[in-house]
Amino acid sequence: MRYMLLINSDRNAPPPQKSEMEAIMQGHQRFGEELLAAKKMVHGERLRSDDEASRIRLKAGQRQVTDGPFTETKEVLGGFYLIECDTKSEAVAWAKKIPLREGGSIDVVPVWPM
Image (cartoon, rainbow, N blue to C red; front, side, top):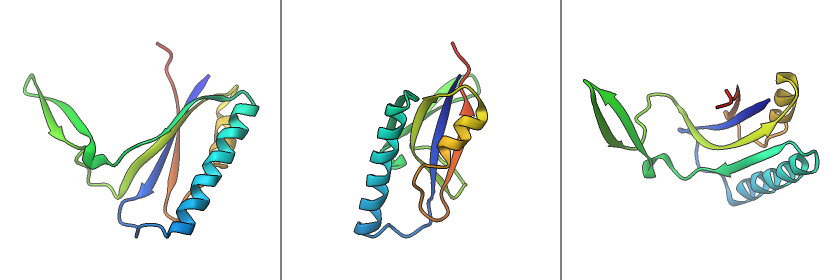
């Protein structure tokens, strides 16, 4: 089964120092290599800022396009990994290895095959 590992960070957190960001990026490099070696990686990407995104919403039967997702949460989606695992427990174990900043989180979501 495939699982989407959604990487969230705290929108209100101060920007990371250069050294912290380098350590996080190196951690993601190692994590990706480990997933590939274990043949669990399907795909993974870092996402650009949500101020570059668009949202399409159906309202009163009409599709409306707005700049960026408007969210009242403190979290921002920063990236994802799509992995192949035998069980949810295995997917959670992989998710625990993803580098995070304080206040960050990982959502482990099973993918419904099309």
